[in-house]
Image (tube, rainbow, N blue to C red; front, top):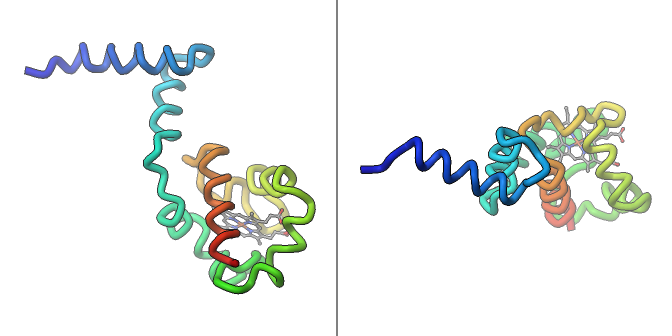
Amino acid sequence: MLNLKKLIQSLAVAAVAVFASASMADSALQLAQTSDGFDAEAKYMASCFACHSTGAAGAPKVEAGVYDDQWAARMEKGMEAVMANVINGVGAMPAKGLCFDCTDADLQALVDYMVEASQ
Ligand code: HEC
């Protein structure tokens, strides 16, 4: 029979081994969030689509063929500056695009998805 306590202990040990510098609870959380299962399209639909499909409040639109018009000038300042705006918010763009369970890596995957979908 599966011993739940032992399973949790071994998961915790694995998490500590991977994220030795972080606390045990944080490590387990990060492990879950950075797992390969992140689905950028599904997360985009859940968190970003509402504004970015319509261009609400001046949001750069995400749809095929709009890159030059909607994204090129924004990307000119460099990905690092764009990601700082996504993480901290800018104008009517809320911090993290309201995706509060997204890690920085998740947000980067979302922006990559949005830029690609706009080509
Ligand atoms: C409430 C509406 C709203 C939601 C939800 C939203 N955005 Fe935005 N977003 C905006 C607006 C408005 C701007 C333009 C801000 C400006 O430049 O003044 C923007 C701009 C951006 C930019 C360009 C930033 C730049 O430096 O030019 C990126 C990238 C972006 N959003 C990503 C996301 C991602 C990823 C999500 C979902 C996790 C998201 N947004 C959710 C409204 C939204």
